[in-house]
Amino acid sequence: MITISNLDFGYKSQPVFKNISLSFEKGNIYGLLGENGVGKTSLLKLISGLQKPSFGSCTVDDIEAFNRWPETLQKIFFISEDFAIPEGTPINNVRELGVFYPNYDEKLFFELCREMEVDPQRKYAEMSFGQQKKCLIATALSFNTDYLLLDEPTNGLDIPSKTLFRQVIAKHATDNRTIIISTHQVKDVENLIDPIIILDHDEVLLKASFREITDKLYFDYGTEKDDTALYSEMIPGGYVNVIRNPEGLDSKVSIEVLFNTVMKNKQTIKQLFN
Image 1 (tube, helix red, strand yellow):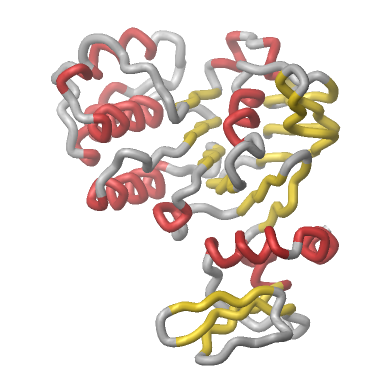
Image 2: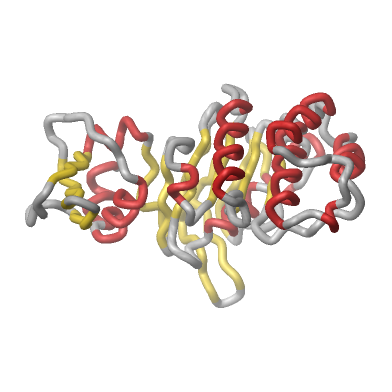
């Protein structure tokens, strides 16, 4: 489990987090959402031990992430949005890195490359950005780490590749693995992520599963705007209105509409879900 307790973090005079607490349990694919600059990438760097909290703790299986002990690092793989392009070919790269990961599975790597429709024998420098990213995703999954951190993983992927990404992640998610996907492109992962975490400056506005969200909020897709709704948004043919759900009626969650609802009703949402 990843546990963040009473954590403060910032860059020089710019605070990012103030006294946040959060946990990530095994077996889930978390969606990490928030506006630009709220610290989504910083949070992934804290988990992977690349940044140090100024106060509080960030532990991975009860060990401080910033200690960067080998037994912790071999459990984590982080693909940043601005990843460095490896030299050589994907197969050479994955073999060089694979010695550091005890559960590395080369057979799985080749299987993933076939699924992602990339050539592991072709040099990274000869690939498009999207092909490079798909090779890195295949690399990450082949290491079979307990924790996989993906920062904007669908950026640079075309529509068919985004479909392949969702299929591959869903197929290779297990009860023993935690996947955290930080993204602005929520439609790319809408049917993949659960639970949802929404960050704001200095705080966590929401951490909830889809079941918990639909227990508290009802997404009403109709022809008219509801002036009593927490939030209303025009859609083709009418409106989606987000209203309180005291009767626990089922509805289909739109993550984009949920995000806008949370941002327009920060204190109400915090009180409703805490």
